[in-house]
Image (tube, rainbow, N blue to C red; front, top):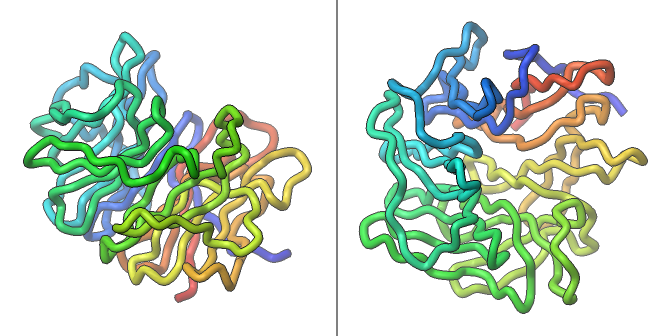
Length: 282
């Protein structure tokens, strides 16, 4: 199957979890360095990456999400005690601080902004549910029903009415993220799978117009490696974007909707992972 040409913006490191700036000019990502994870930014057109933070962060910084409304960045901060919480930082790298919230465990990941810029959803990995956090009050409200579904990474739709997430039906099993498929939940807590006959998939990301989702899946690999796919929100129109040789993951859309960024390996001969981009036809 022919797949579009991929351009690598970084190489020679362990680079993961990209996200575009609100104007699409930069890509923010996490790099493994000196025993921790740092936030870096690189021009979306290519160039040299630079540190985001004005001073070293007291936590390892991963899984960032950039608000288009208030130009703030939310990310997962991992402490020396291996506790994971949500942190906020300004887009100029200033004022990094932990979000003070209640109703969360100490294992919280993958913040995703609501369009108003005053709320985020997260995966609470201790309870295996999606929670919605109000930044003003600090209150966290559970969105999904643990008795029904075990949850992974969430992604808020551009209109804020739906949340896509990686999940699996709760049949009493231990959670295994490799067994996830792509689900949706609305504001009333109603959940459903995107595909009528769900196949493996995780790390969903909404297109800017809310009509499609990008996600990673190993469904075409006998060796468990990942490729990027697109699918319409109604479960139709599945398209494979990258070849399995890249073992690509965590795709995100550009604000214009004409490009995806993701983490991938350049060949089967390297363990390094770079940030890559690929053009998408609207």
